[in-house]
Image (tube, rainbow, N blue to C red; front, side, top):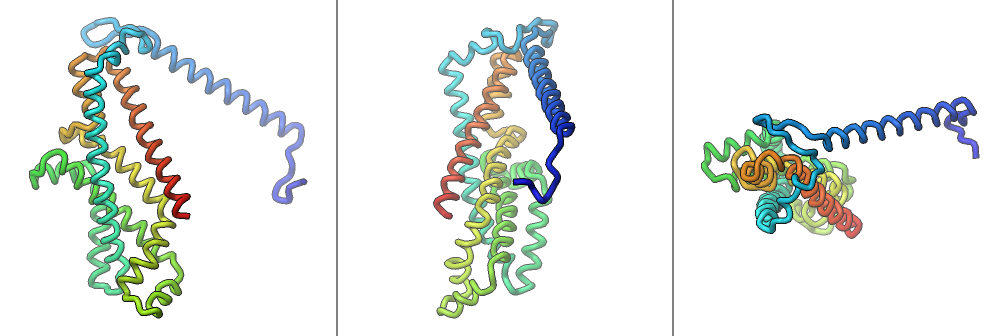
Length: 270
């Protein structure tokens, strides 16, 4: 059926589109081949030492050692410990902030709005350094609280937007059957707001997981620091690329699992 929104492309347009697609594909293949060739070529490392290509087996043999994987697993657990607790605290903080932010009393909403804007505007790393240096909590709690407070502010705004998007009749219906304003919020409005904002909340939790890598700066032993600092210092720069590649794969795998769980929960909530 002919589209009424635009004219169907003619022979010249289809030919131009085909040529553009072929040129783009060739360019991408050439770029990918150049990257592979560059990585595979030997290079001169620090001190004038010639290193074999990145795909040479001698640059990957450390992964045959179980001790290396035990060390990596310790870093993964450090990342998951920080991200898991920070995620729970962020959701709790987000619910509390959204509850205050959606209040009908200005002397509550205005200070909370100022606090939210402040928390959202401060870099996470600066929060970690402040908590570590001023409050002396230690690296783990500095990472956890900084991530929880910052992401809690983002989640709080998302939940507040979800609450504001609900029809006014939802609240009125809850009040009409004898529920208190707080009970109406928690039992009628919040479940709907959470369902609507689930994709945003999950995306923010994925960002939280990736931001645990900022713990590298404050000395927390998460997977990035363990691999790119501890192991690379112990085994030398010869293995820097292979450690980087494995670290990248670990982050991608964790985020894929988190996203898959989120999609499953989203379907169940729907």
